[in-house]
Image (cartoon, rainbow, N blue to C red; front, side, top):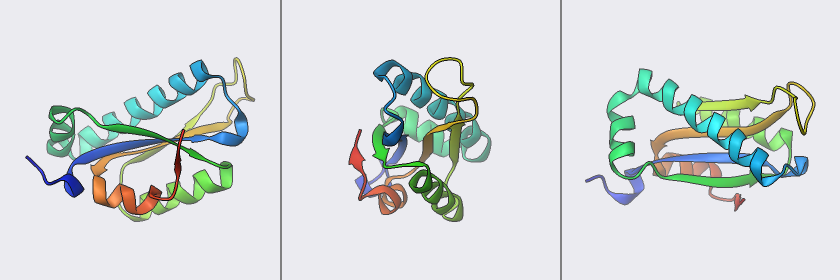
Amino acid sequence: MASMPEAPTMVLIVRDDLRLSSGKVAVQCAHAAVSCTLAARKLQARLVERWRQSGARKICLKAENLSELQMLAGQAQTAGLVMHLVKDAGHTEVEPGTITVLGIGPGPRRSIDALVGDLKPY
């Protein structure tokens, strides 16, 4: 089993400024998780399998606004982590194309914690 700092993890970061309903947050996080998992499976199949076998750890955090989310996305990309920005279709609560959630991972917990360690739980 991997040591705790290297255990694979995924974070789902929700824009707090949008004040989305709990159902909308759940669906947007699901979009991010699925997209990240599919992308990671192509790049790091063994890591994804380790992540799944160890419980597929996911943490939901909040970002203050779009700027913070975009900054984190850039940092994740620079760090070589799988990431996905969810753009809403705009059928319910927000305008079409609104970025709602950033998914990062699955990746090494230590690497992800270095990026998002200061964020508060959603």
